[in-house]
Length: 313
Image 1 (spheres, one colour):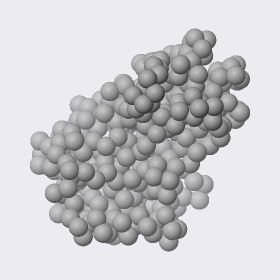
Image 2: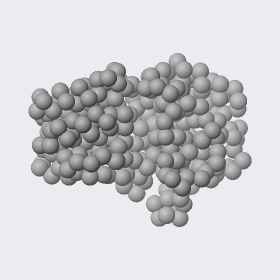
Image 3: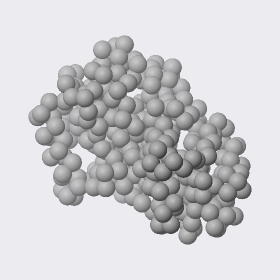
Image 4: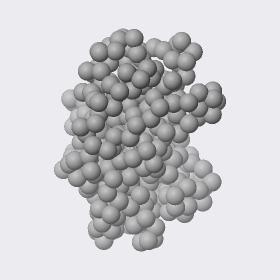
């Protein structure tokens, strides 16, 4: 029986963790195989929860989030005959470990470009969750996309906090978004887990536009959600479960960007009236340019990152 361990913010955060849950549920629906699960509510639980799953015989075990890397390094080494998967980590060793990292900056570039196209004020904003390099990668990709469309745009960037509690504070997210709207922003992108729910509600209440993250969140506020920067962590869970069941488990690092359909800008019936054919054509051109290498989106976590903007302040 496989298992998934969700990180801080809750299984039903409508974002990162919930996308993982959807992947596990898709596996269950297709195979009729049940899975174990655990929701981390305190950082001290990480190693114990992972070890407990391994002791129960769960295989494979997928954990969500870079914050679980230290626990994974210890437990995966203790249980060499168990297969593991981890999302947002790509630096661990082990022949029994499947690691998934994403080019969030590429997908964020696309929704940044879309935000600039849709903005009427020339000011857009970003609300991050915990202030960590991963979230700065979202912010900096977003700002690069904005400036590819409007070099003179104002980009306002705020982070919710510096602890894991920043992933589950919708009240603070709403406060930050309202402050950004007061400064002229009319499109806000949230990469903040459950905190984003407050950001989107503030946008709806204020008559502004918002962009979701990780899962497709367009349905939350039709007519408000301009798009969502989807990050297919559901596929990481589903693919790891399925490969192990079929005896095709392969260890290693899987680096997923636009070319691999690992990230992208969600389009559906909920935002169809907000994105014109011209905007869609421009996005398609930008996406093709990134995939071809003609447009280079700088990655905040790369050593040679040199972009100067609000995202690094």
